Amino acid sequence: SGIVGSAAQKSIAYNKSWVAGVKEIDIADVEVQPWARDEMRKESTITITEDGQIEDAVNDALLWDPRTSSFDVTVSAENGLVTLIGVVDNLKAKRAAERDARNTVGVVDVNNYLSVRPQEVADSDIEKRVENALLWDPMVERHEIDAVVRNKKVYLYGDVDSYHEKVHAEDVASRINGVAEVRNSLSVNGTWEWKSDEQVEDAIKSELYWSWYVDESDVEVDVDDGMATLTGTVDTRMELDAAIDNAFDGGAQVVESRLQLANATDPEPFRVYRKDGTTYRYLLLF
Image (cartoon, rainbow, N blue to C red; front, top):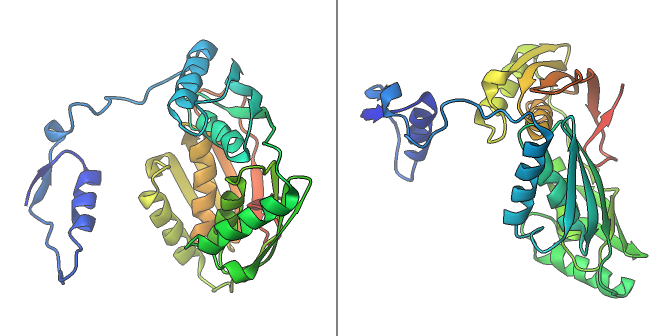
């Protein structure tokens, strides 16, 4: 019982109460009162529209990210399109820089022209390092994955149990010193379970509700014959991509994105995606 400042805080209190030994939780006496909201919480969504503001925000993000702070990255923005230029010594830093830029409010898209120039390491040594990293990583099954290195490029082959494991294996390889690129050819051995459109729609809405990256009130969901259509306006490219991920996680076989980016000069085109076990993420149909 008590008072919280938002429905989200009430939900968090409920979920954190499910500890060992708890059989039932009564949350009826927890009141939501706006006056109890955190004083440090922003009153409204921050709107960044000027290119100079976007450049400053991205530079700050790169400065505070330990994966990118040691590199000299040039950031330029034009109508919300951010371009990154410079040299880094590992693939993880390049990807982190792009992710930091995409996570910045006001950014419509990112051109990542960072060059990866790793230290001189023999391909055989890189291959051993990747194999050891996969061996000791608790989130992947090492015996399911084969790693081959040619000219500092890592090629991943084999079968894994989930898309999460596939993406994580690529991330593990990208962290290894000497790696300039990763080609992920892992196949996902998943069995599709039939669900009605109503079940898929409810599951997607649940994924959006619990997502750390999406404001579920920004996204409308409609499912017809297994195809999920997403409409609404989101703040960042990261939120847009995360909403598409949530739709697939909820059971959609095809996703049509009609989502728009706030403050974008040009409207975002409608795009249709489907799952593909031979690609990194999802295959754009049109």
